[in-house]
Picture 1 (cartoon, one colour):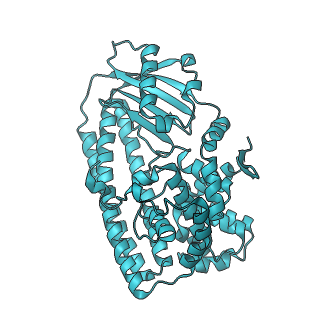
Picture 2 (spheres, rainbow, N blue to C red):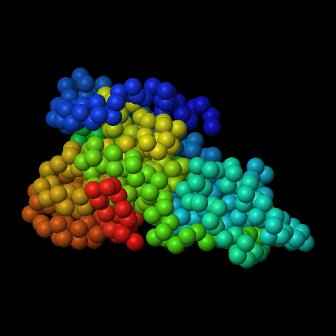
Length: 448
């Protein structure tokens, strides 16, 4: 990818802070460092410098997002023309294509299925042996993702080969689906902007200034959405009638969902237990967030974009964690966040920041936990709006209402009042999946 894409997030992996320190030393120093960071009030000069820094980072991030979607849309449109669908990677699926786009592999973590496909002329036969050979090529190339499960246990020989036709009717359906996808990605970006505003206000920035910047970012986001929709319309207008082609594919069922979850989670048990103790977060919650964010795919990438197992946004949670742990006012890089240890540390540290700083005025631990899960997805401000009659984003004001309610009523209010359906579903998914994971003295086990 071009250098400019990473200009704002480049960080040398070799320069990890405390790399030579022992684990014990890091743990001993952490509590004091966190206490100082949580209690400290920045000077006007420090705050001004940080506001300027954040403004610059947000501007660069906006440029990065636009470039990211330019590249993404171009690739998606090519996939629509070639395949008649919009199958690309996201948090729930890993998709990889051959260089010439003639074949692909899809690992769908929610559908619990792996599909290998090849595109070819209608009169060209494709055997199961050819698909099996493609499968072996793909898993050899993408071990970081494929090793999340054991590919040697998959019963590919028991799977049936299926065919489907690619024609303009299929492409038309794909274009409609692409429009819905743009709407969904716009909502993701909108939630990110709102979360940035909440964090700026909590960090001490003037509320009116932060909200004015939010409106400015919102306008840019609206313009980007219109630009993307216009380009999609051009793609639809330029779609020419083509001779139908055929896709042959073989679908391989992955192990049962519970078994699959156990296998994937066990790979990260050591890191999760270590960071859970370090940051005083329940291991079961870390696993549930990881499960919901990425389905334990270490190379997951969303369209915010966020990266890795716990879907860290470099300029949001990435900056907060760098400030708290390493006294660095800078984002984290994508390569850094694709390293599992780094990602689990950052995600767990951010849960700690939500719990111990942003939501600290919520007294009941269970009520605070419900709010923390929702805030991980949508920001503290949208959580506050559920409880503030005037639609204020002030979590301090909302905490007074939350503290007057039982945890059950707090959960019910969140499930009913959160502004985005995705966040309501997110809260339910995390709480449901958390029940899969229990903490024992020996570590984390799964109740399946």
